[in-house]
Length: 311
Image 1 (cartoon, helix red, strand yellow):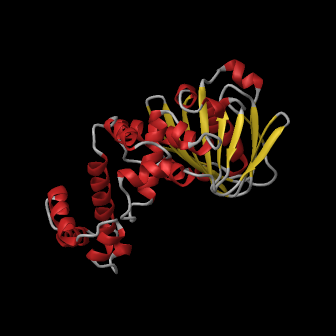
Image 2 (tube, rainbow, N blue to C red):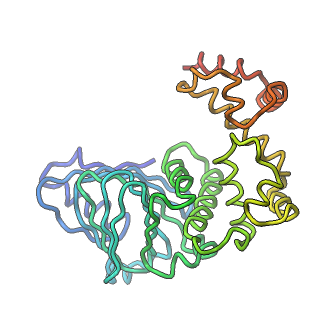
């Protein structure tokens, strides 16, 4: 994880440093000097052709111009999530404001301008254009796109972006999460495509997302899901065969993983083990305890105690 900050730079040189080292050298964009003092901080990491970063700064404007593009064409897509403040983004006559929890998608082959509010914080992923084009070509019909905070699947999209911008992920984990991120963006933007008309990979991602959000619901079953998505039970089983698992095995492992995370979470210490089990969708404590021991090599209470001792 590399970082850049104006804190170590003389006050009168801070914006020049940010413009030259961060804007021009890292992202090939031009920046206009703001009024008053400037502060900025950025952390970034790369994994092959992928780049992820978090940043916060004073208000300033940056522009990706035709000149920037001609000097170094970028066949990538930028995915920007607004954590705090706002960012006004424009492409010619097309403009919108990206606010808290909104996500913007920017085509790297097109010019745009962006104006950050003071104290704005962002999480950004830069991915090859082909990763978006192969899943959601409709997202690139316009140079800039905005997905509102309340769009379906966007909560999971934000969760993936936060994970990808953090440190400690291997290249294989990063690749898998980025694939999932692109699938979720496709789902979040495919508002006019019914679930039963989605291509198989996106349909499977939609099934994953629905199940993860409803692990607590004991009604989750092949028939329940098939009816919800307007597909046949056979089609549902075929989708899970794509990952080499049955629906039942995937659901059990997902519920066990969720219960394991809850038992390790200090904020969940007030909940009993049975409350956590039921909250993750188990309705038989004997089955839960047996499956948990097989999955983690210890009883639920032992895992909770062992994790507490490590803190």
